[in-house]
Image (cartoon, rainbow, N blue to C red; front, top):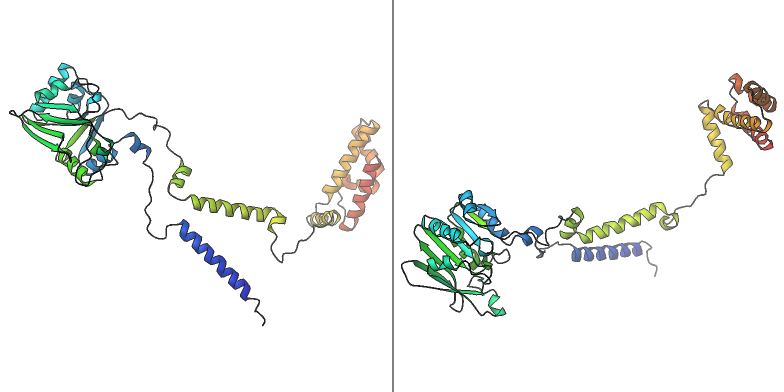
Length: 367
């Protein structure tokens, strides 16, 4: 049984097309696929970036300072302050300022960065709050569905006195955050504000607690550590951004196609198509005559002749030591004969062109 010759190319083309479709379906997202990327450098440098953008989106203005004292709080004229204990100057004057400022209506959220320094204890004593270092386990820092992600290094207790205290406990009943109403203002204390970090704020318990602290205020002053770190480096260029967007496969395939097409166009042995006939170039003599015909068509054959005559004249002057230009012209006319008529402005005909060039070439070689 004879097979139609067209069947094989069709089957081959269908097979190649099927392979291409399969490869593209594996490389590119033609259906919804979750894509995980590392945080941006800005997010790495600022662990509260998500919180700041969230509050800004709800018309709550955020100001940022990287050192704290009474003067900075007064200069910003802010009635709500989120303060890292590490960056505040805990002098008696600055502590008394905070107490009076809260009593007059200020809101202070104090985050304890570490338990190495306890200069803030006089402030907590005023509000009847007693902090303590807790013995924590690594398992304590696992995210739990119904509890915020507290800092388990600190636990708190408080005295039952005239102040109105509200406490927030973890899954073991240990108090991790205390809110105290004092005068017209409010004081909140917790360990490191881990539940407000970029990676945790998306969890519902953290977002609810965060909004309960920051919501309802027109602006907040964040006094926290300076974000200068090893992450502070020049931002990536366009090529890195393209690669981050998942286009690496597309770039590699495009580069390969570009190289193949480039080789195909430049290297004859690589790029000759099936059925293409490789032709040889015309001999130098034919190309010379073709060029001569072109020059004749445009009345420019004298250029070739003038070139030979100038070279012959130069060699005559050099070889025979002729110094007088007029003698050089006469000597040139003597040697070239009728082909020296260029001085009379005559142009050779196309029929005489080949004979003229051969004659002048022989004269040039003989000199």
